[in-house]
Length: 304
Ligand SMILES: Nc1nc2c(ncn2[C@@H]2O[C@H](COP(=O)(O)OP(=O)(O)OP(=O)(O)O)[C@@H](O)[C@H]2O)c(=O)[nH]1
Ligand SMILES: [Mg+2]
Image (cartoon, rainbow, N blue to C red):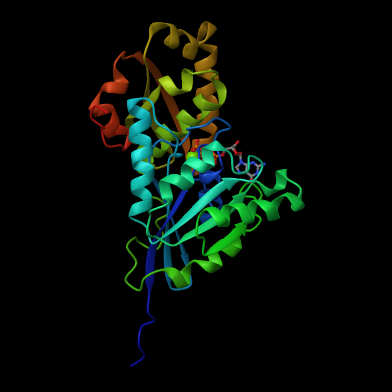
């Protein structure tokens, strides 16, 4: 009787300041989009698992919200979620934006990770934006600040260097059974992913503080009997009537553009025709409503 090969499975947290490219890296590592990306800071609000298999090892990546100095309740819930994602993992990838270097924001991340006991690896991302000679001093400074097992030079947007990360991880993962079915790519339900995609396009299309004042929830998700099409109903919660007017835009043009972009992306991801219906509701206190945090996949933090 031949013995079954030994399997391994472990969690790899992706931590860093806002906007350094953590979600782009996650999507690139697992080869498909499960976590939303935008040019604005604080796009990711919740932990998102992205799962892939390398040989006999199942790698479970944990994308996290950026670590920053939280001021408001929602900020605190996001940073808590990020730090907890790090604590529960077997390895931590600490992502730095090579263009920004070791700025104040990444210093804060190093500070928060000083006492974490997990092995840490440094990922210098966005190397496509800097001259190669700028990298060496950065590697030296970062390694002097925290003990890293390895350093990777990466362009998550282009995919450069990602294979090296994938090759280095399996030997660090504990032996054990796979925790997820072989074909599972993420822990997000289709309803949550659909809400996230709409939120991504709101982040991309709206300016100033508005993206931070809204949240999106999927209220209805119904597949047609023939499986060819899906109807998705979503509510965008904003905090004030004036914000609702901006989200709708003149003659509803703004929300139409957002809906169109989100629909096209959802059709690609789901491989189905999508009918997307967006509603905007004013809910003044949603940032202090525990139910909204539950929907966002966050714990509700009490008073500071
Ligand atoms: N040029 C370049 N841009 C990148 C690279 N990786 C990510 N970006 C861009 O950086 C911006 C932020 O990327 P995200 O993946 O959303 O960053 P994040 O760290 O997840 O951000 P938060 O979720 O807000 O903390 C986006 O505009 C990305 O397209 C890269 O390797 N090169
Ligand atoms: Mg992100």
